Length: 78
Image 1 (cartoon, helix red, strand yellow):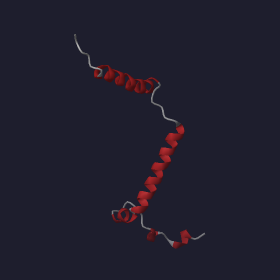
Image 2: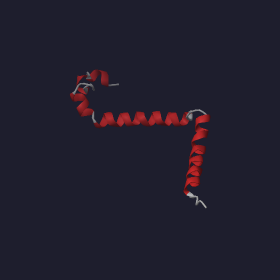
Image 3: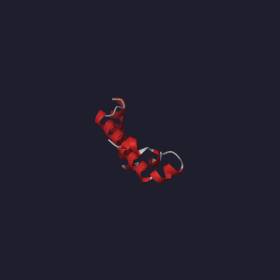
Image 4: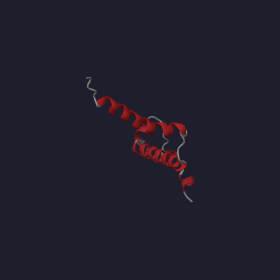
């Protein structure tokens, strides 16, 4: 008489469950909701603004950010 392990059928069952979660995503295509895309773009823009603000001294030192001292005060007034 041969003794059969229960671990093997359980592992196949787990694989089927994992594939059932993955398979529907492959069939419907990989499209994102427009609001999600817009949110990501806005957050990346805010992150870029914050990073530029934090590192403005270093960016001015290497010449990537202009100096405010070079602007004529006449053009700054209303």
